[in-house]
Image 1 (cartoon, helix red, strand yellow):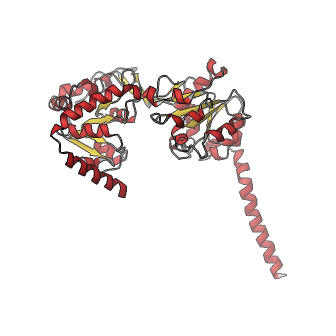
Image 2 (cartoon, helix red, strand yellow):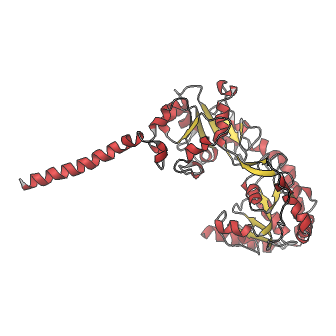
Length: 412
């Protein structure tokens, strides 16, 4: 009798716990989603919300399940900020696939999983049976992969592209700028509290051209380098790239080398935009900046005939505060704004194009040669400047530095 009673109590205890665990999602689903920290994992009712266009984030984002590190109510809040379209709902819940108006795929994760979960063959099976009115969107803020064969299996699978290119179906730049409602009358002396001259953060050591360019630039002007590639340089800063300590330190410099890793049309990244927020003048190297970057806010290396010419100009600005401050005159009339990919998608859904059937030939529309390869003359120009500057360099010295840097990164 004693053991039966114990058994009875155990059944009651564990049975109650099991019932609570199983019923908890159902109970929560009737609560307001604003009260829950991460609603997209259990909000099956998202799929059925009347009058809402569901935007489903289908893949991971750089291997993470949370796109742009959105947590809590942030996926919902993204859509609440949309000015021109407010009838869309953002979710990660794949059970909404059959109800979704748009399904978004992150390009870099697809590129890295050619034979895995995001393979073309698997996605085509997922696509079969879904309504033709559903739009599949290929999104990427990164450069196209040089191997065109990566994209060919996906030809015809997507309906829209959303990239940094102004030729894409949905143009989404890293950031934008807009005119101030009330222009600012005066600007401060931005040179006053600067203690450093030129800084550069670099962690992609495969872009040899820009590494060589900066290595030659430091022959004429002081350049402090941080990031995993700083071992190639004499003057280094040791801090985590994009870390708070680095960002605070960078604000003390007058100039920052916002050098892109390739010369792709319309490719203006956070390397430029973050510096405008820190009151540092970006020295840019890339394809085209007109209409994308804030007018008068940057120095383009393409405007100089040699590396020494650029260095001399930076040294001139360092000694002339009035001339240096001209690069901040835009702050009187312009201010930086943020781009919202999902608002752009929602606007597209509310346009006439949403009712038209379309297929993207991804291997042609997101193509390295068409976007980046067409600018080879620019890279050749910079290579000639590098060659002219490094005539006195020791080939043996540069080789030893490269080997030591590679070993340091390998063992870290």
